[in-house]
Length: 618
Image: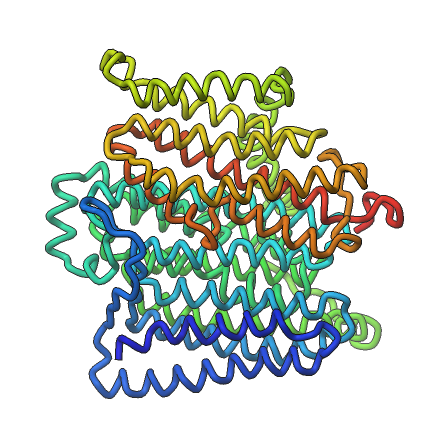
């Protein structure tokens, strides 16, 4: 039966590819194809599930495809199926199917009707990858797809200012989670000396033996997994992004931020539970984060004037409780809680457009005085303080900006000497010197050679900070992003066993997409005034160019459509266990790299067209 697992990825993938070919004006065919894809997926899964239960409901593990295999490294696609996969899969296919029916009428005559259904099917491909992933590398493929689909759906109304701005904000938090997952995969390679599967993690004796010998390594991996889960599920301190994500269409908000995507952080903790269940400090930390989130989100939801924001914070509070249940080891209770919360929030979000009119009618014709609440029993000064804190959403967003993004932007703005001319001269001279040193290491003292990876990685990090904070020159920002990848490759080249073949896997996609992206920006710059100081909304006038540039952006950021995705994993497999600073710098530069890229795309091709729209129009 395990040979059927890839079928559950291939069905929605085929549905997505075919939906790209359907004419945008044929709304009926688009919606029917999307719904038909989900019906086929549901029937196939129910048949599979029936036979699986009859045969004993034993976990299934399938090593499906080995993409790259070397003496000390293997990148392969692995699928795993158990009771947790079954419940998440069943809930996902039912809710996505219902959303496609609802969206057929809700999105009728929207200019982006085809784009919406394409993105929903694309999202479901990523969701399926995550649910039946058998290792972290396979899960990361789906994780990246979900992040991009989320960005596209939040910015669905791409000619408005706020949806695009909030989409970039949400994507930035997702990238923080990506740092955690990348670093968790990096140290997992060193802990297990292989691409560990979730099936092997279920071996309690194997896990216990490794953690006893490497307790600090195990704790670091668990913390990185927690950071990833908290960012994806909008838990403290990453909670501020969830209501901003409601800028997209209501049905996409239901499927993403009410029911499925927002619960995947809890799913990641469930899937890795055998690894961290005996780490008491980690369990306390998970429970504490869940408790803080539940308290804060509950208080914020009670003062929201928007129905969708109320539902978002209520869902966030429930996921905080799921985190607490997982910390207590109640995995099956958390599973039931997920299913109940997912269906409830989907229903609430889908009826939210009607609820407002119902409540207005009730206020006019059946007004009732509000009943006393728990807060009324508190001292007035405390009650008012809590009310103001909740209105300001506990300043979580400003905390994130002040502690993370603003310092990086301030540093980047001080690097004004990195002009186009200076960058090219600096890159050509220093990179040539670096290549010479790579091939003539015998002339380098061991102490110098030991510090060169960190130096070159730091140069790349500085360049990507400048790219992230650049406000004028889009082509300069793009060049700095591409150069950062070359500096990362240079840095890791000084570690042993990083061969030319590995560099090829990493830089092949970067070089091709980097050149294509630069050529597109140059071509566009001759016809339009473009920069990074505002949104230009050029996607309506240059639809094909916008799509091509998006593909270039995804390739450069390591999206799984080019060898660069595997190359990034290869990069980290060659960073030593004792090179934590190098790993942090490399991961940080790759994440900020992705943010700079998506910022370039959003500023040029999304937002209100200044010729026809007010800049700040929402």
